[in-house]
Length: 66
Length: 401
Image 1 (cartoon, one colour):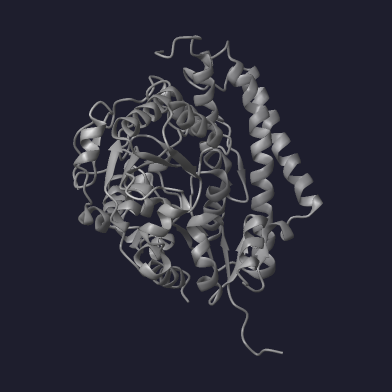
Image 2 (cartoon, chains in turn purple, brown):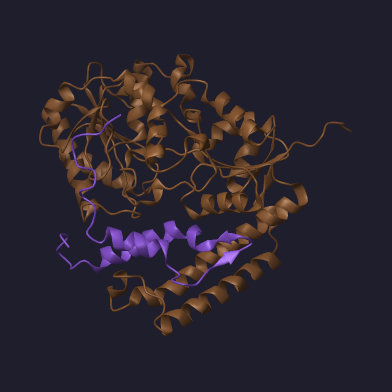
């Protein structure tokens, strides 16, 4: 099924790409593995949430436009 | 004593999506729950011999997990200190406060995840695990189970819900799939995951187990019963509103909370203009306190209405039309039940073509007036009744039973 109407790529916050990149690689060059489980990947959701919250908190007060 | 061989163990998360499967899966598996609350819930359904990961995690394991997490956090502190760890442009926030906070947050989350992996490992050694079934493999609770199964060569299965309304490949975490096998709800979700890069042989169309009852008229309230439950008067027009919440895994519109409040006011204005009773159904992800906010807003507008947090079959049956805030599973449920739907847009996610007509809000009343049911949309979104049977067979086959 095709989509039409609203361009779905629009509307994302300006920092979205940076936040997603930070969440996927929050440990930098450090590997964090336990019993074969890559814990960097495990915590991606939490890190995405918290990095975005930090960006939201960093918005100038009274100006929600960036 | 029974001569029967012990049933194989299925490790699973709980929640509403998987709950309808507890009893039928228990006919073939011994269920082991990651969360103790769902182990108790399954026992409430009279499921026998339920296991809980909590029973496989002693004090020593928890202390060991904290120790492992401390070491990892200490490494992170060192990396931050010597300038090796950066978070890209995110580092600029509050003069690098984000980096100073990172090891603390990582310690907390790593402790929990390592303890869970440790308990999974003990369960595997003591009982064996035939398969891992999760509803979501994005949040740490479900993802770590899927990762553990993958690492141990145990079949991992994932029953997603509404991820498929996002733009494929948008970068949002919901566009990823960690579990090896996906039980998708219908052809549209299958196409969507394909567009996200999931190979077709990883997917089986099973439908949504908790929607089976929507196809069974005997288990549903009549429209009169549903309206009576909310105190709706005879002949009164009922406008439904399915609210949503914003997950900060992706942020759209810069200030989504303000956007959603504005949308609420648009719906209230539409109810006022048409003299309709506003039946507001909250998203399960919203905070409980939000019910008071909605109630105050409806009261303050001087219209008749009600706020519901559960019983979707009653709310949908009572409505003459549902306004869905963004593309929601609730709108699919409405289509299955024959309730017309209007989508009130949010940025970045959308029902596909062939689904409900939508608006940004200015022409909401006229869009409501011409709203119709789209049976083809419901079929594309859900494989129909008997999803529970299909899902149980899929799980059994995946676990080679």
